[in-house]
Image 1 (tube, rainbow, N blue to C red):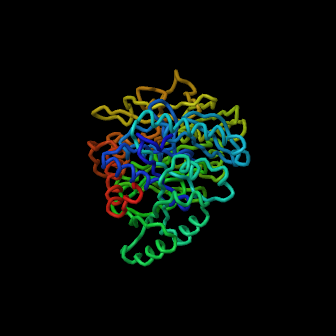
Image 2: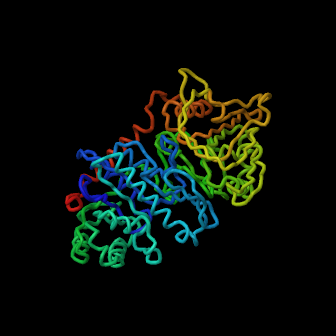
Image 3: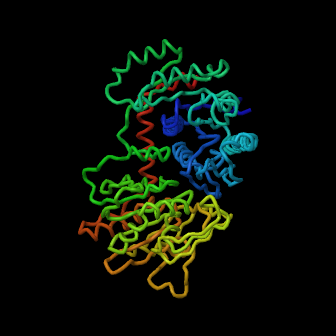
Length: 507
């Protein structure tokens, strides 16, 4: 079907393990093919991630496939990631098919209950994507390792898909983590005879130092496996979006010119951590990811990010004492900002009668920093939004933009007497803010993911923090973060073109 004319041969990026760099190498491949005049079609049959994006039609998909779509010059669409699993604790995941939630799966029953529906969703996604882009070339990303022997017979998104599409595969290994020879040789040895010919090349990723020092290793790999090493990608001193929350642990570097420190709570069920990428890219901002048990200190602001399990994460904050510390911080003059689930936690109460956000039905008192009540229902808000910003105040008027991805609905406890609590946007349901105490504290929050991508609004928020420290304001005339992301993707593609020979893969 998909591999015959007029469609070019599909390409697939596999990895020896999770975190090998498949997502970014797939993005680089998409950008390089686009430069060659092709229409690359990024596709990952099944992804497991709480870092999500909402497309223009209100479909939910993994953020990594959205990034690959931008690399390909396409608008992200949920057909590029037809099966998305969102872990929610206790070995369960929410199941998203073609952008919409279709149920909850337990790990031990997933393949029994969801294999056939998942494969049907994958085939539908493939057909829809190719119909929308005739003549495009599928650029597929695998998941984890393709040779998990206990799962191979039920594999939905690696070699089953590669065989189905007759894809030419590139196998990526991360040399930074060590054991690269064992990674590659072991993976190839575990392939079945029918699968081995699909692997057309090997790629060594994240190599530090002079590449010629690896020449003997490259020769050994080619002689021992019979598969060409198509390239050695260098370690890039760039801050690329993390592929999963584990990559956040590697973000420990200090910026020599940072003037503001912003603490971000690393919640147990953290979601949509890509919301923080625009702040990571600010040279004057140092983000400090904070886990329960670590002291809050006196940062210039604290961000409570999104959560897949809001009530559980709220309970973890309160049990650790970090929640109480955050309240003290706010009333003693601190600045607190919540995003989505983080906004909900800052409210007065949260009710979850169906156990959607905590694993079991219940209710909880929030941190009490905003006079909001939140109720969780089956209805999921999945939409891109845009509205005039009312906060932070200033001239010229700015827009808030981003996307909603949540179940809970929040409202002021007494809308007629809201007092100091005010909406932060003309669309009053997008977020609220209010002063705290008498020492200049302030709490605010929004349902908008991606809120910091708007350069002007981000800078205006940062300038409020800078003013409190007596620092000069930063220019607000900065582009949308998407322009920085484009430049980053171009630099990634430049390195890929310089260090990887694609011809054996394309033949």
